[in-house]
Amino acid sequence: MTLPSMAPLGALSPHGQGYLSKKRKAAIIVRLMLREGTNLSLANLPEAMQIDLTHEMGSLRAIDQSTLDAVVDEFIQELDQISVSFPGGLQGALDEVSHALSPNCANRIRRDAGVPAVADPWAFVSGLSEDQLTRVLAAESTEIAAVVLSKLPVKKSAEILSNLPSERARAISYAVSRTGVIAPNTVQAIGAALAEQLCATPVSAFEDGPVGRLGAILNSAAASIRDTVLEGLEATDQLFAEEVKKAIFTFTNIPERVDTRDMPKITQAVDQEVLLNALAAAKETASEAVEFILENISPRMAQQMREDMEAVIPMQPDAAEEAMSKLVVAIRDMEAAGELALKSGDG
Image 1 (tube, rainbow, N blue to C red):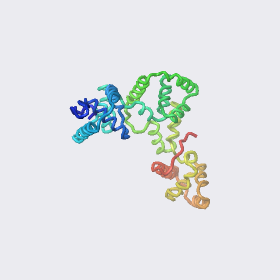
Image 2 (cartoon, helix red, strand yellow):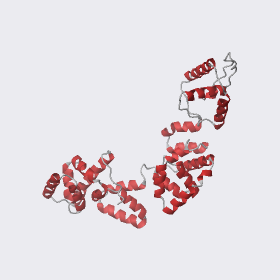
Image 3 (cartoon, rainbow, N blue to C red):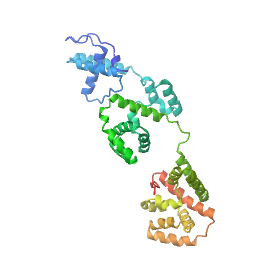
Image 4 (cartoon, rainbow, N blue to C red):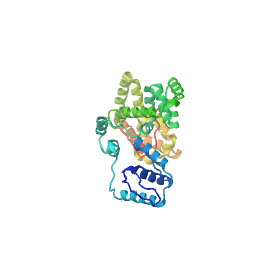
């Protein structure tokens, strides 16, 4: 129900208030709610209705108590008669049920009906990650990029600006100085176009991106296979290969990916036999990682581990790799549980 739908009350006041139109009663209710401190947003009403409502409020002067009581009573009666309310229009319906529809279906309904991708395009754009927005600003014209940068939260804008090439960042920064003359409806149209463009991106069949998927596969592959694949990737797509390397976490990556402060927690949580076998298996092929682990636990435990490692029977390559892999899996499980955070692997 919208406020202007209330039926006329007729002559209400013995003091000359007389007939009250639907618009005037809506104005009375809105004024009363605002006076009582209600956080009332009228922005979702059609613009013509917002204008009419403002004019009605401007034309009102004093309303006697009996008139106010009658208007409020009628408003409450109408609310009491409503059992359930539905979102207005197809945009509201899609906002309500889009989480229950398949992404492809929701996009098709919007496209066929010409419904905007999102109700508030700038809220949608502001919610994108810094990486996504950096790519947007890199692809758009300098003027559009300046508008986007101006509409984002300051902290996010600063982060994005630092991610751009210096020449591009300077050009966009200068263009910000010219955004003061842009009309509000133009800014809104830019936001709507960006949201439409970003929402039109085809829905992927995979939850993770290609880097994450291949990284997970190579994490579980034998070292020889992993090295061969990475060599091939470097020859064909060096940038993709570098991203995949960052996603890979193996025993040899422990020194660069694990925080020294987390090492005692790991050695206490991991099964001691798994830890011992992994250290013994890696003492020749991954000595740097072994020393990193031993140097970042208690001296007493490290000494005991060194003595126990000497007693472990040398393993075949496959068994040694499996032993190291078990420790890596245990660390990954702790990361997934939020017990630690691995470093990015940029180094």
